[in-house]
Image 1 (cartoon, rainbow, N blue to C red):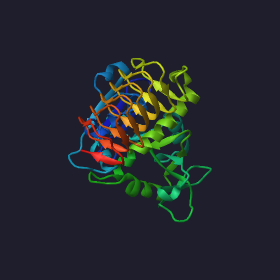
Image 2: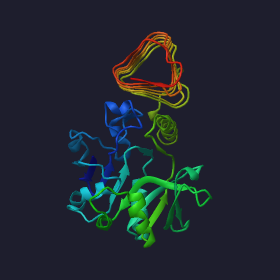
Image 3: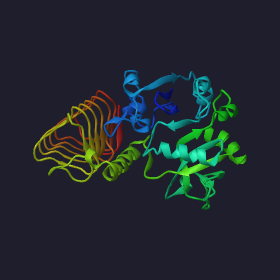
Image 4: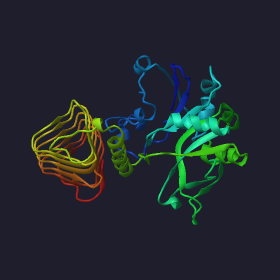
Length: 352
């Protein structure tokens, strides 16, 4: 499914957000919700991209128009643009954004618009620097102009350290290059534009993370909270029970003697009873953490319960409505929704 967002303000821009895929990498959370609607730092992933919600109820409030373009078969990363062609071209000849729904960053969209206008090419992509480029497809570009020369998939020899960040700004003419069939924009469309010297790359300032997998989700939360500390510190929690960067929804209740942080997100309606220890974890909407439980490096899904003196760690992922009994230990358990855990999980495994 693709969301197309059209602003009703002074500047008309459209954004096509790719929300397809088979939702396998972030299971069990995606068994109950589409990945773009999985909470990240207390709001759906998609809210971090263009500050709008998936729900139609928010159209009037935020002065936007949302249209859905639904695939009947998987079309890759370029085919959906052809599918949505008429919607993207309607009422505007302006460039439009394309964003991957499971990427989190600071989204400097205004700066990207200015960059796109300055170079006069057909397409702009955002790139980000990585420490180990051999794991990725590397974008080779001119440092002074940003003009993309070529793409090198998982290079064995160093050719650069910048990779595709999954944020694009495209002229409508790019749609003429895409057929309505399963197509990769990264492997089939962008190389052709680059060969014509019409593709430019802007280096993404700040942090970037693909949060489509649990371990990267936790890392992305740390990077996001670090960014809040630098740019919007008032959004972070504070107090004698807080250590490092923590975000707590105003409706959550925290008991006495808790130690929360670093790198923790506590969602709406959560209840954290006295003596609880939380670090490097996400506690989603409606969760109850009972007295003296300890949770680290884990994701606790919606409306779940962690019992008294329980210990949950090492990338344990609880789906929606999972109940961990008192004094249970979970070492990397991945638990599907609506389960009750009565015995300890001593090594990483999936609980069906």
